[in-house]
Structures are given as C-alpha cells and as structure tokens.
Length: 163
Image 1 (cartoon, rainbow, N blue to C red):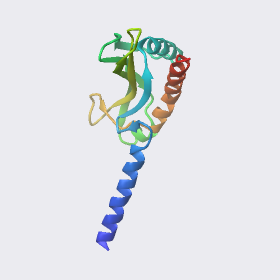
Image 2: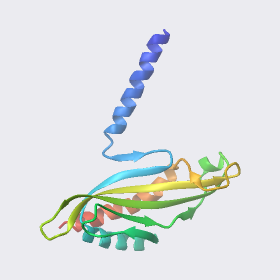
Image 3: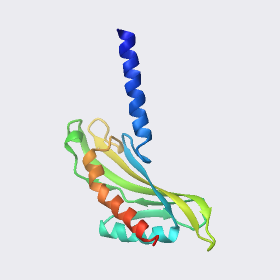
Image 4: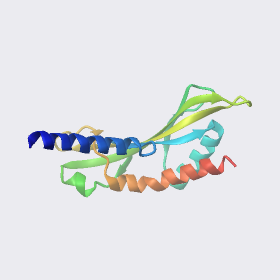
C-alpha cells in the first residue's frame, strides 16, 4: 500500500512538473514572476518602455542600454505597496516590488542594430518583525494580477512596433 501511494505521489509530481514546463515560458517562483516576452530590437524596446512606464507611473532606476551589447537591462525603483492578507497572516510589516527587464542578444541585423530575447521579472521583497531587513518573499497572486496590465501594455507596444 505504501509503495502504491509513493508511486502515485511521484506520478502526480511528474505531471505537475510537466505542466509547469509547458506553461509557455512563464515562471512564478516564491519571490518573483518571470516570463519571456520575445524578440525585440533596442530602439523598439526603449520607446515601448518609455510609454508604458509613463502610463503606469513606474520609475526607471537604472539601465544598461547599448545596441550591440551582449545584454541590455532596465531596472525600476522599488515600489512600496500594501501588505496583502496572506502576507499579514505571516507577520509581514512592509512590502515592495520592482521590475527588471533583461535582453539577451540573439543576432545582429543588417542595419547594425541587434535582436534581443527579452525577459520580464517582477521581484518581491518584504520585512517582518522576525526579519526587519528587506528579503525575498513569496509573491502574492494579487500583486501579479496588479502588474498584468503593465506586461500586457508592454507586449502590445512591442507587437505594434513590429508593423
């Protein structure tokens, strides 16, 4: 009976992992939400970021943005937010998030620009009575839902820039 339960548990775990692996490039771990946006050029990306961040009042903190570089990235300021009910139940005293967009160079184009694979990452940190310094913590679904429109707007701007 125990062997049967063990096999059943292993099968359930294998199916769950297979489902995660086929989720289309999106990953949610405890402290961040990462998804691959796709192929972009730096000039298209800069315009999309400016427009979307302005619309959603997101402040860009720093960036490494040079066409032809092996990697480009954009990092926002940490934004304080309301503590969610799930966090309050485990003693969280403050919470914040930031976005990091990373582009990994895939190829150079005929005009000297490059094509990058863009990855979106929403990071989550909290403080608590037990640990007063900022540290990574599970990302609540409500926070992910709050940032979905930002991701959707960015994807729309990038797709419309391809036309």
